[in-house]
Image (tube, rainbow over all chains, first blue to last red; front, side):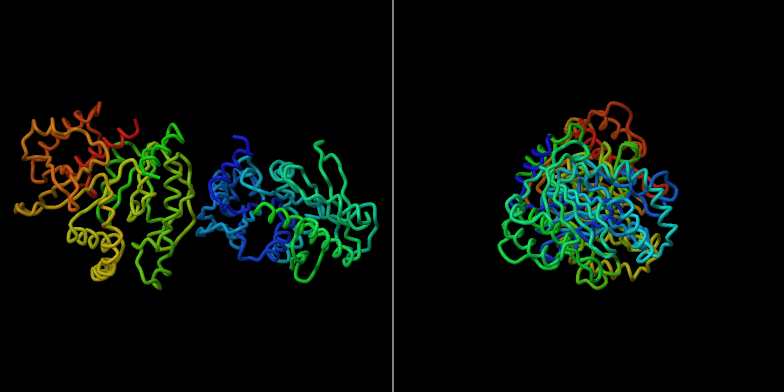
Length: 312
Length: 312
C-alpha cells in the first residue's frame, strides 16, 4: 500500500486523530532540547510525548552478551513500535513498554493516551516504511559528528555518571551501527536540522551555533520567499540546492552570529507570514538551564507551524 | 457493528488467522485444569496460551488503597486487553503486560506471537462486546460456589502460602464484584461447564464429579443425538432445556459415578462421530498430579472438537 494511501486510511478512521511528529537522531543529537520548546509553546496538556527507545528488546545486562548495540533494529521490538505508532495515529491508547535509563531495566509498562499532538523522539522512529507512514511531520537531527560527540560526553559525564573514556569507547563501539541504521533515517525526514558553527567564519567562542534546515518537498512548507526577499541575507537566507542524494531541497540558513534582537524581529514576521495569528509563542529557543539560541527558536517556530497546520 | 460482521472482518484480514478460545471464570474455577488437557492433546507447540489477568492496572500494593478488588474492570486495562485480543485474532504479535502473581508486581512485558490456537484464560476475557467478538469459541467455568471456595482455599493455602481465614476473608470481600462482573460472563459463553456432585444421589466420597455442559446455539455444536441415542442414558445424556434466562440450550450431562472404562468407550465413539480422524488424543482428563476424571476428558474432547473445527 502506498504510504499516502495509508495516511488517508488513517485519516478516515477517526475524525479527530492526533498530529504525529517524529524527532529522530542519534544519541545526544539534541532531540530533547528541540522537543522542549515545542512542548513549552503548545502547552504540555495538548501533547503526548513518547520515547521510541522504550522499545528495547533486551535490558542492559542482556545486551552485554549480544553482538550488537541498542542502535540495532534487532535490539528493539520494531514491529511492536510500528503497531503502537499506528494505534496512536488512529487515536487509540497504548500500553507502552518502559526502559529505565537509570537502571538499564525493562520495567512496568505505562498507559499512553494520544492527545492533540504526539511527539515521538528516539533513535529509530523512522527506520521502517510502516513507522514513517505514521507521521505527519518528521525531523532528523544531524549535527556534525564531532559536535555530537562533545555533547554526548558532556551529558553522560555530567548527568549519567560516566567517565570521559567510557563514553568515547561507547561512541566508537556504536559507530558502525550509527552509520548503518541511524544516519540512513536522514533521507526519510521531511526536515533535517543541523546546528553547527559556520566553518568559513572565525566567530569568537560563545557565538551561538547556526542552524541549517533542509526542507524536503515531502510536506508543504510555508512559502518563505516573500518574507525572506524583504530581509537582508545576513540574518537568514533560503537556498535551493541538491541534497547529498541529488534530490532538490530548500535549505534555510539561520545565522547564529547575528544580534538576537534582529533574529527576533524576523521570527515575528516569519510567524505572521506563516499564518500564526497571535504573538510568537513563549518558551522557544531555550538551551539548557538558562541559555538561549535564536536559530533554535526559528527552527522550533517552523516545526510549530507544521504541527498546527497538520492539525487543521 | 454487529459482532458477526466484526468476526467476518477479522477473518478477511488474514488467511491464516489463529483460532481464538476464551476460558473465563472466577478464581480457582478450574480454568488451568481445563486448559492443560487441551494443551496436552494438541501439543504445546501449536498453542499460545495467555492469561487475561495480566492486564491488571495496579500492583498489589496499589490495590490495597483502592475501593475495589482485582475483579473490577476498572482495576484492569480492559481497552488494552480488547486491543491486544484484536491484534492476536488478526495474527499479529503483541507486547503483553505481565503480572507476577508471586510478588504482586507488574513487571517487564513479554512478546507473544499467535500460534495456530490462542487460549485466553482469566477473570474477565468476556467482559465487553469487543472482547467477546475476538473469540471463535468461549467457555465459562461455573462450579457451585461452595465447591469453588473449597478449591480456592485448598490452592491458596497449599501453593500460595495463605492461611485459611485469609482466603475466606478475601472470598467474602470479592463476592459483590464476583456477582457484578464475573458471573454475568456466563450468559455470553458458547459453552458453560459445571463440575459438581449430583445432588439427588448419595455417591461415596471420592466419586468423580459429574459434568454439566450447557451448549448454546451461538456456535455449531457437533450433532450428538445419534451417538447418544445409541447409548444408555446412564453414562451421558443430552437434554433440551431453557437456561436461567429462558433461552433454549442443550445440556450434556456426563456422569462421574460411571465406571471410567465405559465413559472411555463412549469418548471414543463420540470423538469418531465428531469427525476425529484418529485415536482419542492423549492427555485428557488429568486432575492435579496423578488424578483423572472422565467427565473432564469428555469436556475437553468437546472443546477440542470446536478448536479443530474452527481452524478448518
